Length: 359
Image (cartoon, rainbow, N blue to C red; front, side):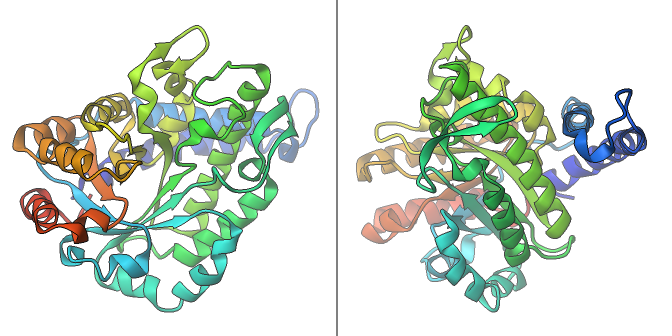
């Protein structure tokens, strides 16, 4: 049984009993006489309790099994299938950036998506909304929140239903891994810090609500879905506990991280990503299995790409990060694979030595 499946077996049992008790309580009028539909805060508390119980449970044997990774490649299902390393990949990574993508995604649902699953591969959907909608101040139950408006909107949740219907399949087949809100730290008006100001705090609070709601939609409509929150890999480089910046920002998402099926971060520094990958895996690994959702130096540097992967794809490094919880690693695109024979051989050798089809 795979790492992720064992993790979910224990998690499902704990969540079932906690949720059952919560539903009984939720169905009764509260002391103020509010009907269940108006008690969103109470429902959230029940869900958080279930996630916390599951997240703090002892890791099952084999969690972080040393030496194996599910290799993935982006940026889209059609290009993934023609990559020179396609046969060695355990998952194909594709992106959703805005509602404009539904045109080709709907077409894919008829042929390409079923073909990927039929080939025994997982699909990894990266949801990046840093360019969607407008930067604006929106009203939330927490007060005014400043940042990208689309991730906080009801329209996003409606679109999440469409995504779940397009990509979802029955449980038991290849999984649908979803990295929601990748680079989430950049969505508010001021990045990387929980308490940069009250409008930023309110934004993050509402974003957490949206994440939980979207996770519920995927679990309901796409039984094969596994959901994670997507971090920018730079967050572990510093710490500002007083304002919730750096590493301390992650702690403010502790409740939703414990509810997640796995954890995600990107690694895209233009100079060096070796320490970011190790450090973010160690931080997020306490919540469950971890994925490098998209790797590529942001400036496209071939030197950084080669130096990073020559350091990462070694027995000692792979043993460290898989032992800390890393189970999957997705390259952002094929640019460097097609640019040189040496780069292609580096990834092919790594996939042959460390690759697996199951998470």
